[in-house]
Image (cartoon, rainbow, N blue to C red; front, side):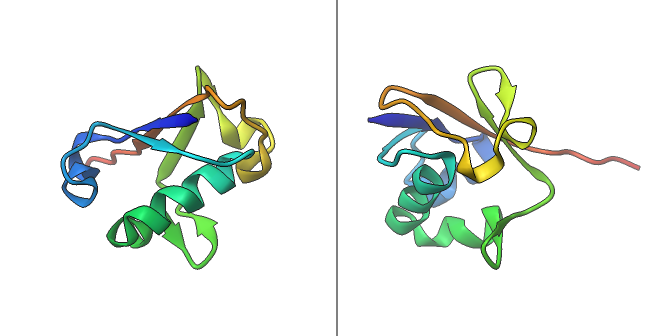
Length: 89
């Protein structure tokens, strides 16, 4: 099964787990499995059915936005990372 590394600010919604194992054949399916298991995480990742603009998902070292987005296929042993954008002022 694929795994998703959860950033520290979002771990409160995953029972303080740093890495969560998910199923799915695409990035979108893996994220859907994640929010099905941890529904309180959904509004932090999605606006409607689209990934929020400040949420970046990486497959290995590649930002999935530059691949096929949520339709990016993943292997069963894929390592995904959620990295929220940080803005300053």
